[in-house]
Image (cartoon, rainbow, N blue to C red; front, side, top):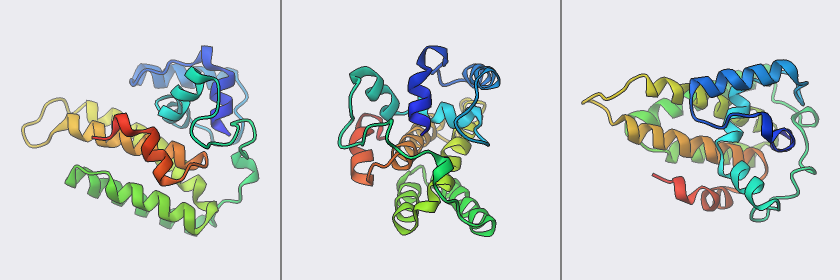
Length: 187
């Protein structure tokens, strides 16, 4: 899946958490043939920011009980939900994210992602796109700067954690495994 693509081309990526890194990733994608249609720079950045990517690269071996990243099926082989179901789920996921930002929590998004993947593996595309959308939201949070009415740093931390969980869940980890892998990021 995307993990393999990112690992195979690790020297080309800018893993920083910034708009400049997102632009750099876009440039790389213009030069490379992505592993599937619809791949955006935000999809790649979500993986590059994840503990799954960092630990797999650092160890050069499986992380937890994750299957060999070269054996994980690509999104091309995973059936997607119908367009109507996709629209319903992605809208619901974004509303849950907004609720989590209001509550400064990650629990509802983590529960949604895990539940949907257990209910129907076709939801993998929804979770993958949600993680990419959260990358874009996270970069927008940085633009807020310091605001007395909201704790931007806490919201950034919550979003980072949700992105990390989403990437791990999409790549086949169970929620408990994803939480263990991202334990250092948990706000």
